[in-house]
Amino acid sequence: AGDFFTLCRTPALACEVTLQPIRRFDLDAAIIFSDILVVPQALGLEVQMVKGKGPVLPQPLGGPKDLERVKTGAEVDIQKELGYVMDAIRLTRHKLEGKVPLIG
Image 1 (cartoon, rainbow, N blue to C red):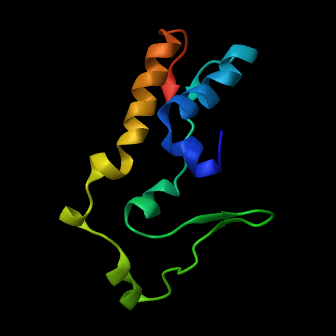
Image 2: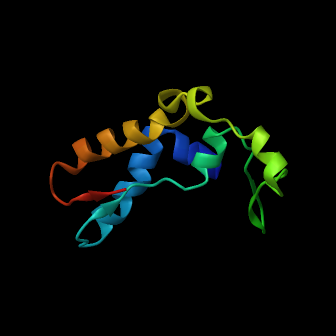
């Protein structure tokens, strides 16, 4: 299905990953598949998943001057940058058909 962030950014894939445990186990709730690292990406920072290491910010914020690289306020189109999260939530809620609550 692609790399980790492709799973996060593709509502149908995020929905499927969320539903798989619900189909296999008797669970009380589903947790939407996403990641906190989509937020820095939405703010214009690069985040890479490095095999054997995990998430890496090639240019981390090291001091106040680095905050100039971060998009703020009107620079961030929330729908454009993170709309896929809401799309995944809507799709997953629909597919759950009220069987269990959705967290996330």
